[in-house]
Length: 255
Image (cartoon, rainbow, N blue to C red; front, side, top):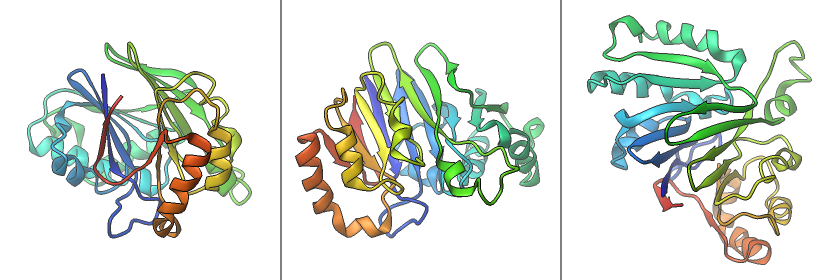
């Protein structure tokens, strides 16, 4: 059994009831964090999730709403005496810069209570331990946003597939186009966590209809959609026949 907790369900614009993107996945005695938008530290505390059991953090891309909480999270772990190592995975373009920024905010590894390091996300399975395998699937979100203006930059963004002994979870991250989901749904999924800020809801649901997905959670909710939840539910009923939920901060489920 895998437990999933949506910590922050907002898009890049947080609202009074939604914080920036972050999702905790708990398997066995370990936890894993998908994106670390602020204020993920406070939300972990609020939801009674044992943050010092987080083995690794996976940041899908370097938009601030997906990673800006990582610094306070590392600080919180140090202040509470964490001992075990922490692995942080980011797009390869950001590895050196993120290490430098940790030192800019005085999170010097040599004086903390635990070791941490930053590693590049790779296409295919790039992380595995005794509980889980995690694969990176490149998508076009950052290229669609910035490549024409900054063609010299090696912009990267990823979706993830998480596999335990008996469960498979898809995590879209932010998308550039609906075709980015093709490889994510190549395999049957027990749960798919998919964003709603950059893809038109009816097109997304029509695409997902008939796919081998047990349950869908829509997250990364843009403020323009906050008053349209009933419309989204009607679309979901039409295309997905009740197999979906709209995320909110603190949503918990077992997979």
